[in-house]
Each structure stands twice: as C-alpha cells, then as structure tokens.
View 1 (cartoon, helix red, strand yellow):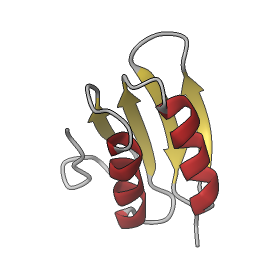
View 2 (cartoon, helix red, strand yellow):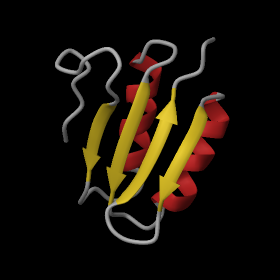
View 3 (cartoon, one colour):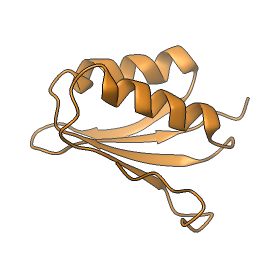
View 4 (cartoon, helix red, strand yellow):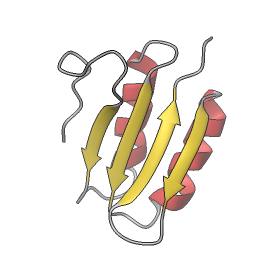
Length: 86
C-alpha cells in the first residue's frame, strides 16, 4: 500500500494502492486517508476487491466527501475522491 502526501505535489492526488486487499481493508484504509487529509485533497484509490464498488461510494457519502469519479469496468477499480472543506 502506498499513500504519501508528503511525497506528492500539492496539486497532485494522493494515490492509495489497495490492490489485493479484501473487504473491509480497502474501506478502512480509505477512511483513514480521508480523515487525515486536508480539505480539498484529492485521492485516487485503486482496488481489486469487487465489494469496493459498494463500500467506497458509501464511505465517501457517509463522510460527506465527494466522489468525483469511478472506473469500475475493469481491474483495478479506481475511485477519485475529493476531501470536503469542512
């Protein structure tokens, strides 16, 4: 798993490579990254667990953040998320 906002330029998204992890780990890692992220931070989450198609959008809504896009037609499943401002 890679998530390093210290190594990412401010305008570049934080990448979470969660491929190979099974439910509930992708959602838990995404939650932790979002809770630690500054408002406006963008995350790109890559997963292979089919349950993330349900879990990640639900998590984003629950936290009040924005799901900017998702690519779920092929693996890896990719979710683009923006941390809310408040």
